[in-house]
Image 1 (cartoon, rainbow, N blue to C red):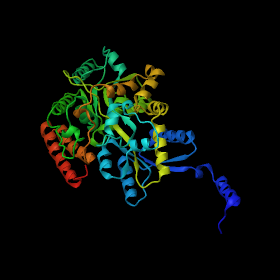
Image 2 (cartoon, one colour):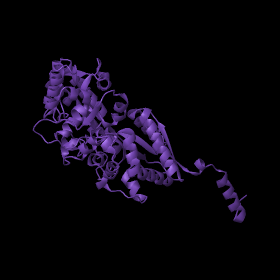
Image 3 (spheres, rainbow, N blue to C red):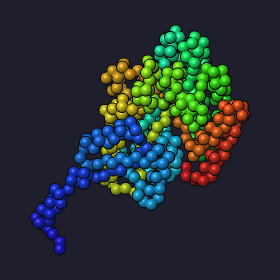
Image 4 (tube, rainbow, N blue to C red):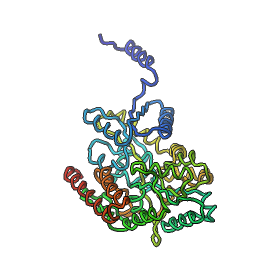
Length: 442
């Protein structure tokens, strides 16, 4: 029986009044890859957004690491049940761009009336997640870049007043500190591809790959077997052989975590790590420490470094109400107040100049100077093809095959040049396969 007139209105109101606040809101699903302390801060972001308005209920779910989260979301999309929002690493940009499964974040913001000012974003952050149409494909969320961490107590004991600006200075300071008996370890080397080879290339303004580091076509080729990388890797190997640098651990799969531990335990004077490790350093180091911008080679002017981290993608197959909610969340996420909170709570950089200036005006960097180095590093230099965040197909696998060859050189099985030649050849074979599989999609 159809209910109409006043009776229908009363019945409708009764239904609405009987619903809980959460039930009355549009639910926004977000699959992410953050756990531990970072996951706890993410939950705070969710709580802040939910408390800021009464139309939407953001529900965040951890799906494992970046690879697991991406795979889960792709599987869900194939059966028509994707999350509204998914967090994916900077290495997944090309995969998501070619998938035809997502709606550009900029398109959503503009459609639902939110201001989007590209000039306010840190250039490396904006450039990483911009698609071929010049639109922001994904909303940057956790953006980081590597910096140099150093043990201030050790440097002071060795009579050194300033951290090294160049790689050559870092090597000599390591030698001097060891010679003076201040430490047995200068540089704690984690063999991290992102910081030691990718960021090294970008910072030196030298191409990691052709076609603007992959931004201008699937036919890009890796070129790190030429340019400055061979000499850089040879220098690191020489340091290891000399004893002024050390691996973090016995096994390659724990070199990175071991290098961090060696620095935190006060065994090594220098360590390069993501600015997102700030919280770990602040909690774990039992000595006076500071940070500095990445070292560069003598005789060059460094460009901006490259970002890592992840961004948020919005899948198709959802309702207009959900898309309006995603746009509202992205607008909230980029507000200066929220960006400053996220930056200070995690060590990730604020993604806009406005948020950076707000933190600076509050005097935050006077008490936390090391938090500013990453931002200054990202703002320096001029954008170029070689300074772009690397965008190559199936890049996680490409990285691994290059790393396999580099490990052989570090184990004295082959030369550094052979390792980089072999890694480049194997990596390019994978890129050609990816190009064939995705022909015509760009």
